[in-house]
Length: 258
Image (cartoon, rainbow, N blue to C red; front, side, top):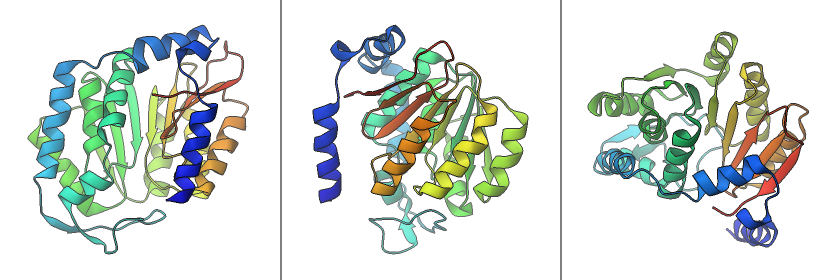
């Protein structure tokens, strides 16, 4: 707890808003997307999905392949609790909707479906996109599939299995416009997935890494990602690390309050 408070204070001291940005690309992103109003119909759809999960009190056994939970003491968990604790929160959800509206990515990959809340946001944000999502746990994937069917989110392809098995074939076949990483919060795994996904990038591709300040290990991971020669622009929003590969951009790193 104290670690995250200290890190957040440091972030506030070093971060800026649109007035401290000298890159036209990032300035437009911040003013026309980050600080823009979210489409109200998309917000309503997001809230409907979220409420459906919050009312689901079914208990499932979760196979946790990552670094484990700091909240749950047992692998037997209520779907509603998973959605409230591990699901995308309102701030992230609305920002993700705005990012999808702004960039309109057509091919999207999500590494870490969980019960499907963030996947639903990706679908709501751009219903015309093709979304591939990966989940390691069969039981949480089952909840996600039920959610997708209930809300008729037909542009989602759910892949179940260990990320090491499901990610490699997908990265061989498709170039992705946006990849959302919300799986393992571990240095070794995150860097492995990052390097695998690099082969899928185009000039306008976007990577979003969740919880880059979750631990010292994840901060180190974020530092290494920023240093990669293919990475040009990064934005640290404290809760997310956003990566761009635009060759026309000078390498720059930003900390932006959202």
